[in-house]
Length: 92
Image 1: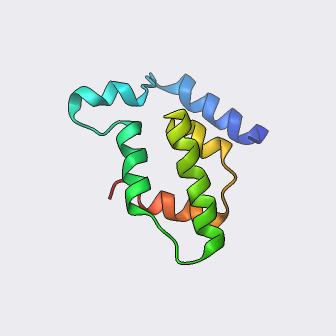
Image 2: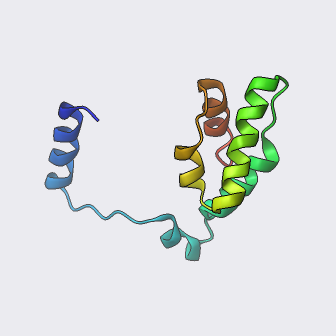
C-alpha cells in the first residue's frame, strides 16, 4: 500500500470507533461463510478459453487443498479476467 492511503486509513480509524469482524461473526445472522462463497464460486464460474479456465482450475485446486478462500485467492496467480469474474460472482 502507498503511504498516503495508509495515513488516510489511520485517520479514519482514529476519528470514529471501529470494530473489525471476521466472516465468522456474520454466520449467526445467516450470512454465508467464506467456505460457502468458495463453493459457490467453484460451481458458478467457467471460462470458454483454455488460459482462463486453466487459471481458474488452479484456483479451485488450491481451494480444495487448503479449504481456505483467502489463501486460494492470494496464492494462485490469476489474471485480470479471472479476478474480474470472481468479483462479479461474489454471491449475487
